[in-house]
Length: 262
Image (cartoon, rainbow, N blue to C red; front, side, top):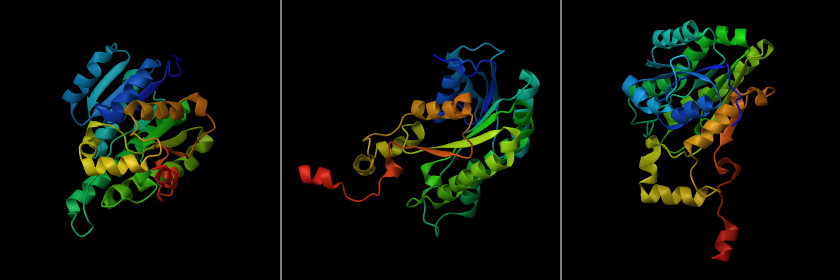
């Protein structure tokens, strides 16, 4: 296993499950010092305990990413404890399935706060430290930030904000040698998407549309995060990388060859 992150300090949000947890495992396996946060400290301790990392390689903190002061405190404590910050992974996100005439204002604001405001808060707090280390930001955006979805307009708006915030910050901080990129997952098999895979109609729709014929895994998303955070991506910034099994490469027209063979 390459040790691309030995001596590097990585701060991650929403790290107790799904893509965030896989990213922690991946980065820690490559030598990173981990500062992990989640809304539930109990969930975080349960998820990260099996990693068996020593105290000089792991800090866990409860953090509500919609609260700017809590996010700043998390970043500041990371730097105070470990002396530096090299990589920030913004992973928090929230969706809401509704028509625009149905969604209540508080639900709209919560989606925006968890998904988009959190990235702004963390980048604002972390950027002075990342400038000093010439570090990197990797945001978890989504293919839903690149295109529209039926019934997910709030999520589309929030992830679209993450996509363009990623580009803008990449431009602003390129001369400081701070790289800012995002992964854009497609359907990923996490506890949060289990309801889709448990619904026969939704699963059949995905099966017919995904060129690779399956959802992605959290580990596959973590691999992409680690690549963008590493020195192997030293000349890559402002990129929103689809990791979606080819879903956004397709026009969504009928699969003529498959129909002909049937």
